[in-house]
Image (cartoon, rainbow over all chains, first blue to last red; front, top):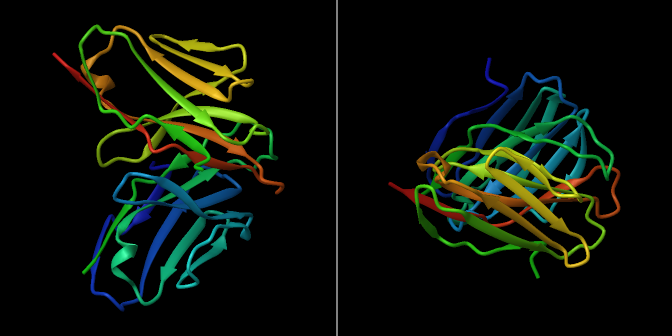
Length: 116
Length: 113
């Protein structure tokens, strides 16, 4: 009964490859997110989807493309992987909120990506 | 300037000690404030929300000073299990209909026996 799950947990790949990370939540939440946590442990939002619609798109290279087939899933596809993409990628979900509301985000266990 | 600034530590304290973490945020229009906890190689988890009047949850006390744009977390009677990284988190909307969370880099705490 995992709330937010991600696959794979670890991903080691060569520079230039294309890879995908999958995320699923069974909390019935409307909003899902992708975060990147770099080697300095700084956690930064990349994308947010609300009911399959892209809401937040931070300054992220267009090699990163999120896809939300339904509101319980948010996948992240990365083209032409670079060394600097090595990081931990966290998926999260929350109930939809308007700005100003309290909100709790539930995080997946993370995907540790290493690009060689 | 980062949205949320925290002292990264590390803080190394003995069991039973009281320890305080501080955090400042840059957007005066920020609406909501939180402390998350992240254990080593794990995902962040909500520790507690921070309310304007200050709030307490067992050994944990959070304070908010909107005028100074300052948030604090006090941990009393530290336990070994409190060892983790504590993330200061701020919700801002930046003009969109959906708020977004901004995370500080976290303050690392180690409690030793």
